[in-house]
Image (spheres, rainbow, N blue to C red):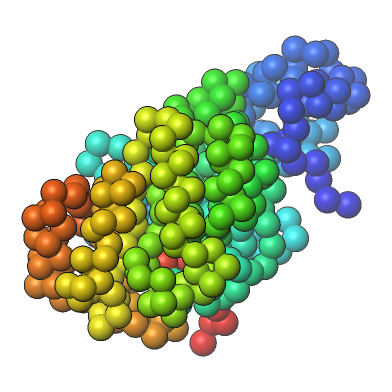
Length: 344
Ligand code: SF4
C-alpha cells in the first residue's frame, strides 16, 4: 500500500489525519511548520514530535511524493540538476540555478511533454503524464530540503505548463501563499509554447502571472517546421490573445528565442521577430541552442549572437542573452529529459 503523501493534504486534512492517529490537534500545526517553514522532510528530524508519533508517521506517511535518484552538479558550479522518481516510477527533472544575487528553481509541470518542439530534448522523449499539484510543489520542497534558498521559480522544465493548467495553478497558489511557501507572485514565471486554450483561460480567470512565450520562429510556416504546435495554435492568434492578456495587467512578457543554425538566425528571421516584440512590448531573451546528439540542430557562433543582439538593439527592443548554465550536465534549457533516454 502506498504511503499518504503529506504534501497532498490541506491543513484541515492533516489535522484529521493527526487526530485520527490519536494525537492532539496542535501536533498537526507542528508537522505543518516542520514542512513549510523549516523545510524538513525526514520525520526523524522533527524532534518536537513524540517518538511514537514520529514512528506512526513513518509507517504510514511520507512528506514528499518523490525521491532524489540522481544529482548532477555542473562543472562551472552554476547549476545542479536533480532527477526525481515519483511514486509510480515516472522520472522528472528539475534544475537549481545559482545566479549572482539569487537562486532559481526550474521546475517541471509534466513528465515528458506532448508538444514536440524539434529543438527540445523533452519533446524528443514524448509525453508520459501530467504532474499533480503536490508533485510540482514537491520539487520546490526538495530543493529547499537540499539546502537551496530558492527565491525564484520558473516553469521552464519538462512540460507545457498551460496544458496542465489546474495542477500548475493549484501549485502556484501554494508557492505564493504565506501559509505554504510564501514566494511572491513576481518571482514565479510560466513559460508557454503558445497554447491557445491555456492563454484563453488565463484571460477568463484573470490569472496575472509573469509569462514567457517560446517563439521558435516568428514566421508561421517556418515556425510550424520546428514547433508543430503552430498548426493548431497559430502565432497570429497567440499574439493577439497575449496582447489582450497583457493589456489587463502590468506584467511584462518575455519572448524566448532559441537560436538554431541555418534555421531561425538570419537577418530576415530577426526582422520578423522584432515587430512581434514591439506589438507585445516584450523583451527578447535569446538562447543559443544546447547541442545534443538527439537534437537535429546546431547552435550558432558567438559572432552570429553579436549580430542578432545588435539588430534587436538597433530596433529599440530590450534584449538579453541567456547564459548557458549547466550545459555539461544536460541541465540547460531544452535539455531536460536525459533521464528518460535509454542508458548506453
Ligand atoms: S520546449 Fe517546452 S513545450 Fe516545447 S517540447 Fe520542450 S518542454 Fe515541451
